[in-house]
Length: 375
Image (cartoon, rainbow, N blue to C red; front, side):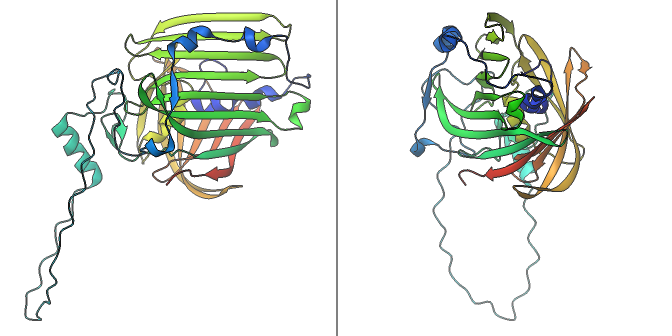
């Protein structure tokens, strides 16, 4: 069960915590459960169309689709410039008597060039609580996400494997007329742990390609003690989130909850936040924050660079940066235990290890298979 006010890394692996201390053996079943858990209000607000493989421009270009202008903020589209015609160079043999030219002045760094470009175009990164290095407006200059990427992680509790978790990037989609990333994750208990508590969950979130803010998320829960469908729509034109939660408990009773609340601009959700961590340039000394809207609350995720570390996993060896996230609500930190995230120290920043220290032990998720997706 997803718990409220948790760090986003912990949210992704919190399903493992539910695997202990339970006595049931099978996924809960209930008559007409699928129909009872439908959320027609959500379906009316979200229209999704998958973008075909020949229209999946990946990195560094804005793509305009019919529909409303990008929100929040008015970020103009950056049109890709046509490649200049190659310059034909005439070969010339240098004479030994020619003087040696001084070394050319090295070109400015990428960060300097981007800072100058951002200054000239007015594309500053917002909001101000976020570290903006490596962004041009809201877009990361090096897109870390690739269609087809998939990381499968083995989740352990008290050093016992409890199940597998996957996080992946599916084909681009057009959501309400906007090109969007489609991030999907699953969690499934192992056959041994399923004898005590069965889990078969998935989540899906759509994130706008230009502004990197979520448009929606869906959570589908099939476990021994509950069947649950959670849906949230982010209406950026009104800066409102609409939340729908339907659950069938182990007494086979339907519980429902709906709420709407005002959200700050550029807020992530609990699932998109884990992907959004990868958009930043992690380097020594960096501390950044970003907003998270979750179940009626507006939180702030704070994250800081801890160290570089090389690790060995069943999926291979990786040079990583280690980041520690924390959560605050109304300026006060929310206790969540120590959570650490290992991301590959490259442009992709794939999450290959998660660790959460809690009062009665430690939950660890480590990569067992990595598919990099499209180049």
